[in-house]
Image (cartoon, rainbow, N blue to C red; front, side, top):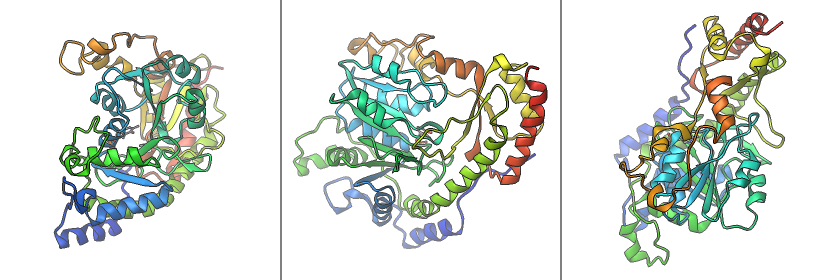
Length: 407
Ligand SMILES: *Cc1c(COP(=O)(O)O)cnc(C)c1O
């Protein structure tokens, strides 16, 4: 069965983008201390809408969420060799944005049910050098931010929420990404809403917001005139979002609620019908959280099943389930970390700043087992799925399982 790629871009975006093109100003940033330091009309309007929607004090758009992660981490005054705790079960941009500041990613293993940090492991990995925790709202459900806050207590450790996959999800009544010190969302073309490429940083911390704005727009060139005291890590970049993207973003944000409601409906249509199949773990729904199902994650209990993951996914796909993928990420196993070759081949920045940290197999055993043997997912956000598809997929799971399960 062929199912079209998911597309939320329509007439509203066409009109909005055309307006920008008609007036000819595709970007209106100036990289010096002036009114235009904060960007053009649509950038500022979009940011304003974001603060209202997500109920935060500050929103800073960027040209990608990877740029957003780099700016957010840069705002925390990281020193070379400082440790930033991260999950191995996420996209590579999380780890590379840490390395960007010559800080050291410390990968902490995850919980098999929620794919969030294993909190015991998190606690054990906090050291004198830990400056931040990058908590990822993987697959569309928030990390346990309040529990992480409890663990770090009064230590000066920042929490950064990567809510790239969880834009609009709620945690204890608040939006994912807004409970940490700083957080944000991706607007790339694979995410719930998109502007082609783009990112959003959200925070209630004025100092962090100001630094992010500086890093976004050639920091060093405004320092002269702004008389800033804290000039650490203000190597400036161009992380600016354009006017067309911002105009599209304004329209996309209006659609977000509806998009998420439908995606949840799709996910529950499938999950409710297959949740009792033996040996199949469907998404663990946490209390006080909403799940917006960027993907639908599954974990196999192989002791209850006749076949390995490869065979099972093959059987389901062959019978018509679209969008299944095996495994996810084990960032600590990438050559970049195994060989410590992020900047040249001499081991920098681990050498000379922090050589203690290693990335051995077995460091994140749960994430490794999931990746190698038991985890698969349905790419819910990538296809133009309808309820009828989910009904059909549920039937296929049920039918195939008669043969897959051990008797
Ligand atoms: C998509 C994604 C990113 C990167 O966002 P871009 O906008 O593509 O740079 C980072 N983290 C997670 C968890 C993501 O899913």
